Length: 419
Ligand code: PMP
Image (cartoon, rainbow, N blue to C red; front, top):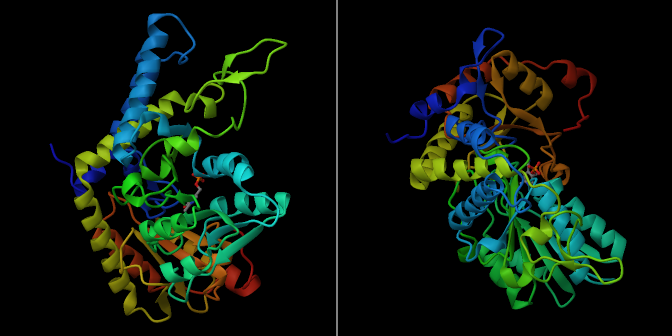
């Protein structure tokens, strides 16, 4: 039977029955990690109870079965993201791991002294620091294209930052702070005019929209399973075959070698195994595939419509609360995120107050310190929605915000921030 987002999806998520401090859990930190539907939990359990063995390493039936299951998960991801070939899908621990892998392989291949790497001013630290460290270590320049006061990076501004010294660009698809959607297709097209490959951080996009890597033209597209209702510890590095095929292994070890002797040069296997040294997270891949299937069954149009409803409801709900401001324009192209500030009250105090009402939100800088600085605030309070959230929960947030007061952080550490 068809699951629709909202109230009817809640029954699929066992954790939503949790009560904390006598209150029902209102989980609005989906941008940090999403909860897992029974379908994902069952797929993981079924894997461990019926098919667990190491992959590609054993000549016995159970190992063949595990290998088939793992490669089937890869094919599911391939089709879900519109990749042309299964070997363009590399399983990694997550977005952070994927970007580090790329910075240390592709980055080191392409970027040298005096070259430039272009990123936007709205990157999560995970799509910023690996590039920054690469640039520092090879003597290249990291060019940060600033976001404007609405929190967007217009494509012309991005294009103007590209030049003959640009070797690589890395951009987020959707901002984890404001939910802003970058015009990735146009950005990629501009970069390609200079022959510059583009790495896209899709961590906040994949839970909210059907991503088609070929339609976007992305050379690499990376994301985490856990933000799209899949397990933690699994993520995807998609790379165009011609590009991925040129990379040397990032880590070496079991599963990466074709032939090895003490005298000859080591020969490595082709991708994806070349980039998946060691025992992979097989159950994670299985759970991730189940999450993609679950979302496809719900339907991307329904998911988008639900995001639209909740984001607009949240913007409207807080609009007549004194002192509450929405940062950016989340309703322009809703991606399930609304970031607010309460004037005169530290975001940690707001977060603590909401928590006392059973509402889980993230407050602070959201691992995007420099982007949050753009808005001249110490941090924001981020409401991030998932398929099981409801308008009734938005009303609970509004009601709780009516009584928020300055607390410990506002009084003692008004400008301090950590997270
Ligand atoms: N990029 C973005 C846009 C994110 O929102 C996140 C997670 N907050 C990451 C990268 C890092 O993802 P992970 O922690 O799963 O590696």
